[in-house]
Length: 415
Image (cartoon, rainbow, N blue to C red; front, side):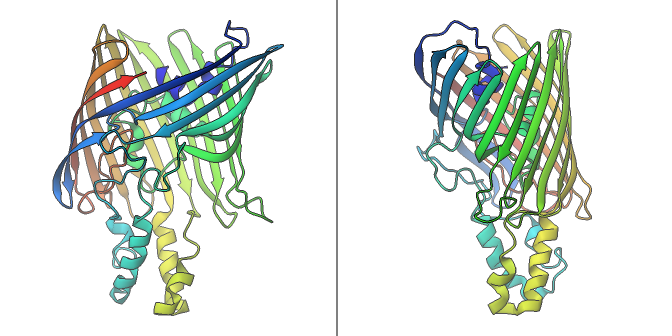
């Protein structure tokens, strides 16, 4: 698939050590995606913007390979993200630093109203971290080097995780647009898309593609803190494919944190392909919240500070099922995708979200196409998700249970 070739070249595209290649090559590549984006249901009402990354995040990169003989190749990828509308390398959602009501209201968090000013301050601090590449890293999308051998590929650096690659494979949108399954599970994030400080092994043979990944937390004196493990296996047959992926990561205290298991399948039906996936999401020890009590103790005292920290931990916990069914068909220059997604929150908060809609792509050439997106988000209970795009987060709607509609028109060019 084109999408997987872009996001996991070292594993998916370069494992064949028998292919005829130049002795050494370096390729400059990229993608520019932008256009008009309309989102309803936000705190400021309906928002109309020129956005970057409607179908895919804009990027450019360098990809290199050197054939060193004997079935061995050295490879590297350095991939930058940027905003086509502003030239920046970061972006924030339309809702800014706003948190969902379930993570900002004293009443919904089970706390006395007197602590609301403290929650406002903590929420502003957490909200300031919501966005894409807030740190402004030069090669935020990918940065790795590795070696392809006769027994598989070994890569090191910042890479896509096995669980995410599995989800991307069995998403009819190929993670493109607000209709992608991951769009309804972005806050808190239901899957680690990419991680730094990782080592990955990948192999591809006889229709089977498999990877194993280890991520180092790099905390002196305790290698359990921030540690990550992941793996996936997929099989592609005649007219169908199946796969499973798994991610698990520890938090800053070394406790088991975000864990995902994704199973998916595709089958060719008529002129197109049916895609389906099911993911189990679990996080009993959310990351990055262990210092809240120490921060607010001077304002409210140790006992109340502990209650506030526990309320945030409970609010950020995840126990949900994520489901996707979609159909993708290409006929000549036309590509149509229809899909339905559902996040079933099993916690008392019951922050359920579902989405459905369609995308249309018209190919002007092999490298340039026009795109249209129509997606509806339905939020139930304390659900509050707003549509984003492949290159940016949607954030949250004006209040819990408020629905949202996304209409977008854009142009995409690859080089």
